[in-house]
Length: 348
Length: 267
Image (cartoon, rainbow over all chains, first blue to last red; front, side, top):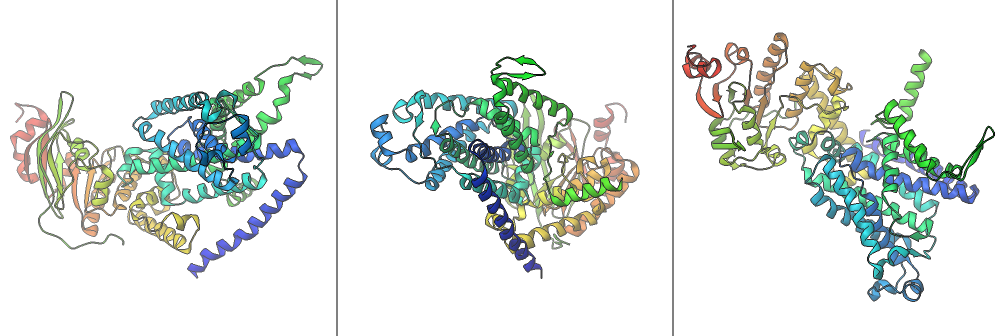
């Protein structure tokens, strides 16, 4: 009886997956261009936020260097997915023939970029993990700047500040949301296992974790490797949606956005990261037109560049004051919890 | 009950020889030696700043000694990292308990079962029946420990919200979850009232027999050490060095002990 319980849980998945696929299919068909792009950006931001949450929220390795990881993974994949004529004839990259003369499909490019991101992330983590707190943050900040600098100053491989274009439009609903659901699934499952518990124990109290037999270095590297793998994949999806890759694409401003997502949603909560991603994506994209100037009650507001960023900062400050633990806190969204809360409020 | 283990081996389970540790100019531990027999309960006392907690740090490898040797079950564990020492069978509690913020008692216990790792990553990701079975077993085991400590009804409360006395119990339950052979208790009764203290002393004696533990007990409360007479022998530290060792009757007469606590000329 007990053994079969495991299978009945599995048997519920096909129905859920079927429903999700149907919804995605309908959205893919019915959404107009702008809203579809928005939906894809939401998915990409979900991937970024959930994976950043593994290091920043769980293991308390507060990284603001994930932009550099996206850059590394993005360029690694881009060099393989760009059309051969563009690499050879138009911008003339100086690369070995086995890179220059091939164009590979999306899946291997994603995996390759993810692995490169993961390796770069671990190489960053190894020295950075000797530091704690604010010093760790500073190293990751420096790493982000260094990666941008490197991309700008290697014109033979990256076309420098001019950037790369003419990407094939690989990114679609299926890739983005398939991977987003995968990341969410992995994160939620890990959280309820000894691996996630080890991450969280390290994040809360490193000394105690060590005395519970947890190998700190090993688990910090696991956390960083996993987080950077999916962050790099998020970067690659972005590149093949925007069809443009330049050194400043994943600057600190972008990292700031992703950090804001997990702070608003609740550090340590996977569902919080998704909610944060939805809010920030909506905020920055939907409100973007107001920067062009608008009329309120007959008063003309002039063109204000950076107005959305300003509003975002205000929202962030308000959340930090009113609900410092974020919307979800450290908990997860669940139908059971919602039902319990509803019945309680009804009783009152 | 998991961890039942009553066979006693002979020979010292822990042997410390000539341990030295200094922080800058401060000699925290000076030529510290100790021998703990299997199944023994040894008290480690001394005035504030005598270096008792530092000795614990040196045993678990949290601090690296400047010189000296720590041998556990015949294995040299000097300057090993705490996670390896824990794996070998030494668990400790903390004076400040170190309750994980915002984590339920039951989850804190499950975290402490980390070393058991009864399934692997693939079991987690594919939600195999093995994962479900082992997770349930882990939960049952955690509840069993909490029941033993009389705090099973608090399993779903946040550990950091519990009163101090109950937090202490969770702290000890958490250490036992590591299925240790040697338990290092760092001032387990500090901050407790007399009733709570008496209860905790009972618990310590009970777990010692039940799990076949050897225990080193750092204690501030002379009532626990002297009046209860729970220790097989007591080591007295002063300014980083061992000044004497003996049973509590012997120590009560010892002038050096009185001098260390109360100053010269009182005795």
